[in-house]
Image (tube, rainbow, N blue to C red):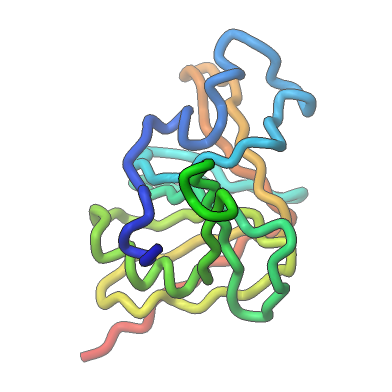
Length: 174
């Protein structure tokens, strides 16, 4: 299957991040759906990125839910992604490098103030800026990335946690 043929579609934000089971239900550590393999994208007006010592707000985010391959090769500057497609696909899934996926898909997606990868990065790879002119800063986690739906005075708030977050700023060519 060609990278551009993957069924990478817009999804409602809570569905995209595997949080629909948390609505009106459990929100503790046991509420993380570790078997969630959904993927896609959503425009999210505001979310928080957090690690053990800090958190920061990201506004106008294009969030891409992606999954690293459990048995994928650990690379210094890339992540092997796995798209679980089901029984009609030989082997049930397709793998592709994150760099190739982003280069192919980012030009097809709407522009935003920031790009956030909701993607586990078990090898702590330091991704490069995508080869797409004019892209926004890209945020990716180091290690596991978990999605949370927090209760706040202003209503539910989305939070992604990781061991650390890295911002990759695209180089602007003239």
